[in-house]
Image 1 (cartoon, rainbow, N blue to C red):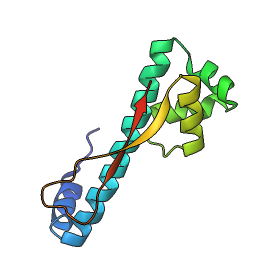
Image 2 (image 1 turned 30 degrees about the horizontal axis):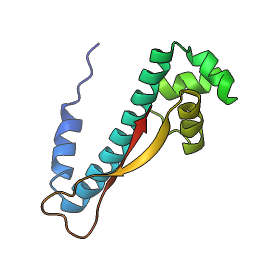
Image 3 (image 1 turned 45 degrees about the vertical axis):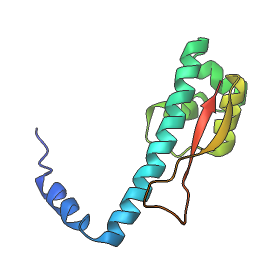
Length: 116
């Protein structure tokens, strides 16, 4: 069975023409991308240290299913959980300012990073 997404793509293209919608969409996409980057970095560190997801969950006092979901599903993890995982993996979470875009003068955006 093939899913026809042509209508959705057309509708999204139309909505992205609205500047307000586009700003909100881009902001949401940036947030999701940053969360994904942090989770991927933590998962790489987890694999590099040889810890299973279940062992990592035990070390931070979380249900193993919750940790598996964090690394395998679209999730918005609690910051406390992210910090606890980073601690077990001998890493820390830092917020690092991005360079502003040439046309941005009023507001600076920040990006989190993992430091091992």
